[in-house]
Image (tube, rainbow, N blue to C red; front, side, top):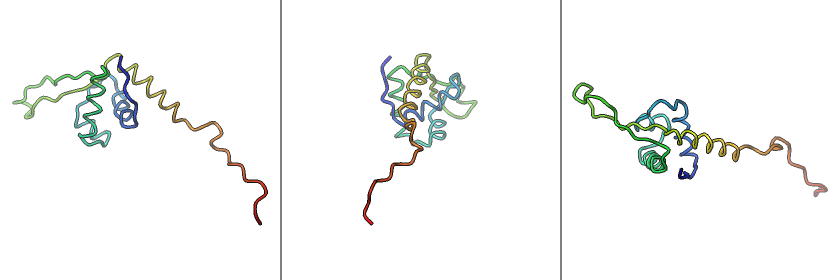
Length: 113
């Protein structure tokens, strides 16, 4: 499966999908949840789709009954679920503070009086 460059924005989008892997998401919902404008969101969705991580489906509705056109829905593919979990875990590990991050920095010795 092709890899996807993991950025904070990509991780944010993937996290939404991983909250409920069985639930398809549509663009406006993703924009609302992530806070990303369409110009930022849709290139990420397109990259994830091109890599095989996302599957695009069209909502099965009668537009005359619902009063709107069918939505394009996106969901993680089975391989996308696995890849997203692995990549987010690796990102989390890379961003983890060092073990001694809470210790005070050593003070310089001898100083001017």
